Structures are given as structure tokens and as C-alpha cells.
Image (cartoon, rainbow, N blue to C red; front, side, top):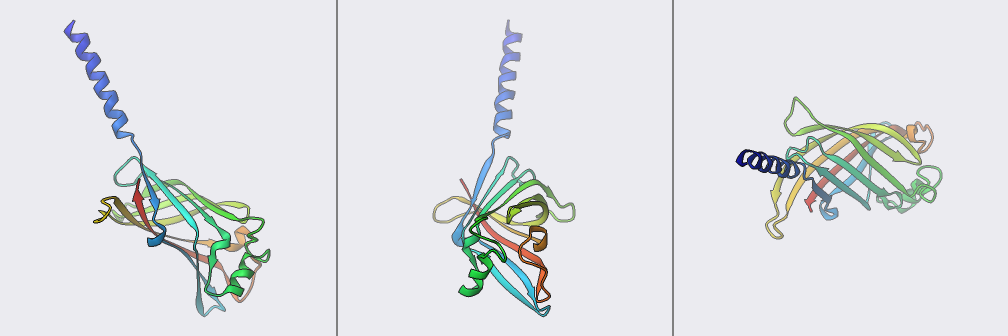
Length: 194
């Protein structure tokens, strides 16, 4: 009778181990130490910068190296900030983002794959929904490391995500010789482990 008992015990031990391995870690953005910004070329000669002040990022992963991570971002169009109130109002209007009709933008990753050329870089593919249109976009993420906060003792992890989108793909504004169609997006994220 010892053999069946041993087999059953081993099976339960394996089951417990599988649950341990599959446990997801959840990370949320620290808004006071993160930034979601964009850059557009103006008149072909200068970079015009802006950001969104209100957004949330959540990342879940079962692997310590984040190679199976899933990223979900939600932001408020009305929080756009270009350091010019009149320009911000124009960008929120129906001429561009139409914040009243489309108040939110989202990004949901479909893959988060390690770059074979760099141990800290990842290729992130996901769906961006902006101005009521959803398109697949590709981003690059660089993991800047994970540390323990000296005061609250929570784990924090830093990522820089970058990518380029074409605003006309999302019908944000019209073709304009004074404003580039390409928009460079940069998210400097400090994520706190829950």
C-alpha cells in the first residue's frame, strides 16, 4: 500500500508546484514617477512635445524575466498637455482627438517577446484603440531593472516603451504640411508590484 500512497503524494506535490509556477505577478504604474508622452515634427524643423496626464498601466507576468508579460494601458484624451491651453483645446476638439465623443484610448498587448540581441529589450505587439479605431502597433520595451523601494519595501520595476504610429491611421487630424503624420510615443514607466 505504500507505493500508491507515494504516487498520490508525488502527484499532489507536482500539482502544488504547478500552481506556484503559474502564479501571476501584477504591476501597476506609479503616476508620480511615470510619464506618457509624444513627439510630432512641426514644419519639418522642430520637435513638438506633449503628454497625457491621466492614464493607468497594468502589467501581469508569470515569468521573472517578463517574457510572457501582458500590458494594458488606459488613458484620458482630455488630459492631453502641450503646455498651451489653447492648443490643448484644439487637440481635444473634433478637428483632432474629439475627446467628447472618444474620451479614452487603450493599448492591450498581444505578445511581449524578448529581443535576442539584448537581454533587457522586448518587442511588444498589441492593439491600440484611438479615436474609435483599433489598429495593431509594435512597440519596443527596455527593462531598466527591478529594485526594492527603501521606504515602503515594495518591488518596483522600470520600463521605457517607445514606438511610432501614423496619426492618419486613426483619423486624428488631416494631412497637414506643417504637422508630421508620424507620432513618436514614449512611456517612461515605474511599475509597483501589488
